[in-house]
Image 1: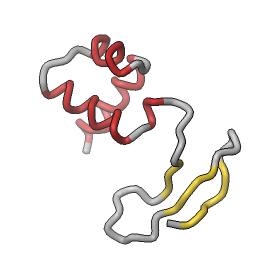
Image 2 (image 1 turned 90 degrees about the horizontal axis):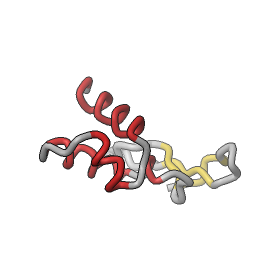
Image 3 (image 1 turned 90 degrees about the vertical axis):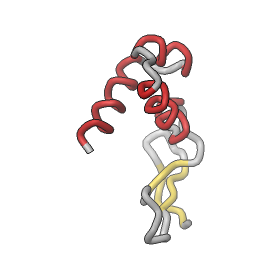
Image 4 (image 1 turned 135 degrees about the vertical axis):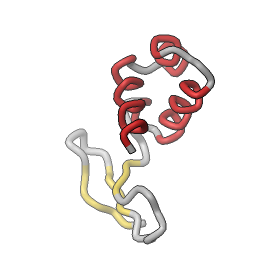
Length: 77
């Protein structure tokens, strides 16, 4: 892992040099919870267990739009 510039908010961006890593560029401290990989995983798990979009957003304390966008990404890939 090496430094890879800064975000518009001034947070440090990092780049992973491991070829097996699924994410190449990332930030350690996100300002919005919806960007966290663990939250994205929870969105998918809740959807598989029958959780609704609004309920998922309320429980995870993120926007319903974020939930929809993540589910759209997962369904297309």
